Length: 243
Image (tube, rainbow, N blue to C red; front, side, top):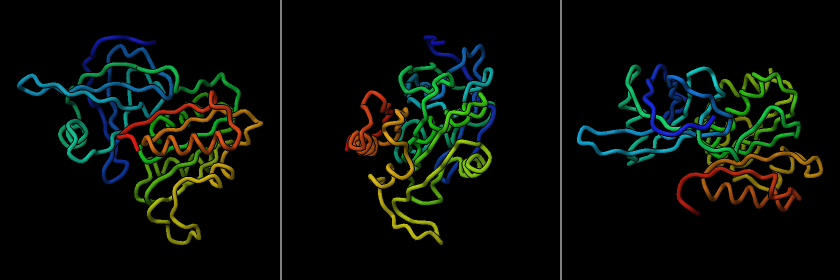
């Protein structure tokens, strides 16, 4: 499945997710496919020859030559502002991948799955949720999604629909800044009580996928270990500065 070198892709569609993020649908000729959880590198080349590349998790399972990546705008970033504001349908961009074989879910694995995402870290977890449905898998999934507010939820409508219609999928939200009206919970970061309530008991030996900023991933991983989960069954993907 892995291939090397850069390939020319074309933007064929885009969907806004939040006020500062969007999903880009790329057409990559002869794409070999990918596993949910893998990522790709996107590279931009300026007229003067200057190049900048960034890695983005794939947010949907393999679908022919199409690759979907969900991009969060990084203030003062080199690449994300152009991807969200400068790249138009029909434009070309270079792609390399798929990359990564550790942080992936395979439909042949019968173990229960816990997904814990922070902000845009939900993107590769969404690929797993979608792949589960496409495979008609009965493996039970639980998602704990930490976001600042309801406005910051990626894939909001789809997650509501899947939580209702996808049997065996449970979705729980943790709001860190602003709790939606009508909920009695207080704004907080993911804590032991959240993972204990919405995750799986360690004795069931689930596979735990945790993705988000470095500090978030480290905190959630520590909670899982404290609750008795084996470190080898905690798979992590992180981004952003340390701390």
